[in-house]
Length: 138
Image 1 (tube, helix red, strand yellow):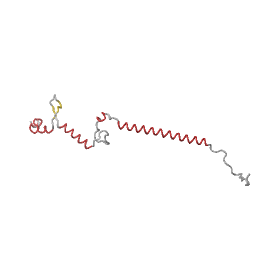
Image 2: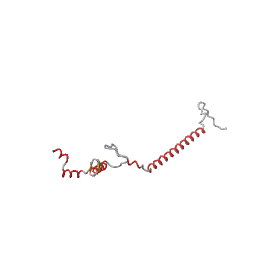
Image 3: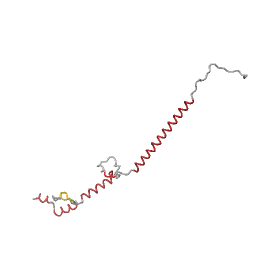
Image 4: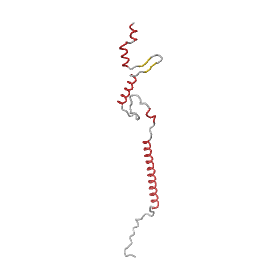
């Protein structure tokens, strides 16, 4: 044998049971497999959401959606369907009211009551006077 003496230290010992490498390998592979499966599931979900978003963007508008009337003032939030501004809404409203006031139509055809434009009514009253005022004076 060798010429050197063997060193013996009776107080020092080593671990008799080491960590089994097959358990460590199995746990590592299981964690890796779960991670890969989760990544695949997430990729599928994200792809589905992107496809759904694209389909919603390309969706045909419902024809009756534009028919819904704009609520009366004050509107605290804008109507997502009607993208006009408040000034445009007021101008449109006033123009519609002017059209109504400046047209001829029957209110009660059997009773002989008609609606005439304001300017025409003022002109008639100016020329003929009010029948009511004539009757009140007598």
